[in-house]
Length: 171
Image 1 (cartoon, rainbow, N blue to C red):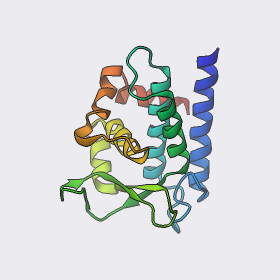
Image 2: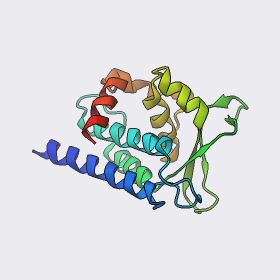
Image 3: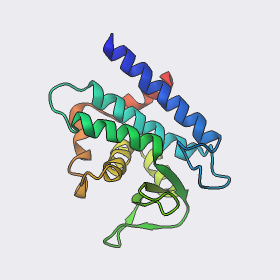
Image 4: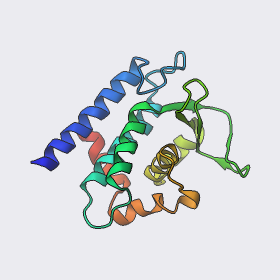
């Protein structure tokens, strides 16, 4: 019963976040004019809720502590996701699909920038975009995921693209 209630809560929070992002609310790009409701942004955030849900369901090996799961949830609710068309570079100068940085418009918070074209290519090519989402949210919560050492473990836990497609149908 607890597991069902947790799933319902996570799905409802995903729907609320999608609604808020569509209306320009806090769950999306509240600070960006005209970008609320972007399906790319909504998909990125939805995947974050999916990952949180699956991590809460896993038994045995845990990638995050209970406290880190709560931080992840808070990050999903409060982090701005900004879709950009310009090339993104990481701290080593390498072109990346997404990057996390300080949100200068909201002191003390992070933002995730997501390159629309590279993200679209990753989704079309069935790359494990869940890995990208988890990687960025790990940085948001302050967990070092250099070289994807933590996020690469999602598949070992059975958190796959096909699982996300099932999750999405139930949203």
